[in-house]
Length: 299
Image (tube, rainbow, N blue to C red):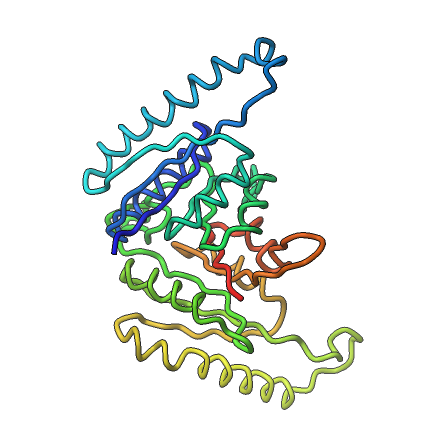
């Protein structure tokens, strides 16, 4: 069975970072890489004023030159280019339907860790039926790896752990499998984070109940262990670190992302009259994580 990784490409620094990450992931997957560039036609009456013809020429030239560079830097990966027209969010979401993975770029937040996810990226993540990975501009291969003994980032050292933010109460198999496979490809540990809500007395400033806290923590740890038991057996080579913590789940995932090669969260597919949504936890992780984020849709 052939595998394909698709990267949205428009020549921007964020799309260049996404294409490089996609090429590295295609190499790990043994997949081919397809750069998809989307041309949104302008009305004929405005074309002379907006430079429509020149822009379309650039949309053809730039991805082809990028593909040539990727082939040189990733000689084991087959790289192709596809130029499509239409609304970028709709075209890219459709492109994800025929791929194992769609990779998009996002601008980094100056001075802060995290992403500035544009309207196209948010729309694609909310509507795609297959996993979508968001990569910040400036993301380098060495960022996914542990520092070498001298403290210098290096792509020659082992991968940092993969982080999975899991809803252990109603876990979805596709999200968990994606995370285990990502950790196995990288030969690294999988840190699985699950959060349980703080007891109500925290909100009212009442004294803590240590026994209740301990019981809640024990109960949640058992729920998490049960959710992962069969997956540990299916992927015996993957080191799994289960972490059950009180508080807001997005906060814990964002904190863990600072020492991660990849962060994975789920998105429930909903049919709603107000349109698709990514959910508050996934939304927060997308905007504040310090590592690439994979959003895996599930029912």
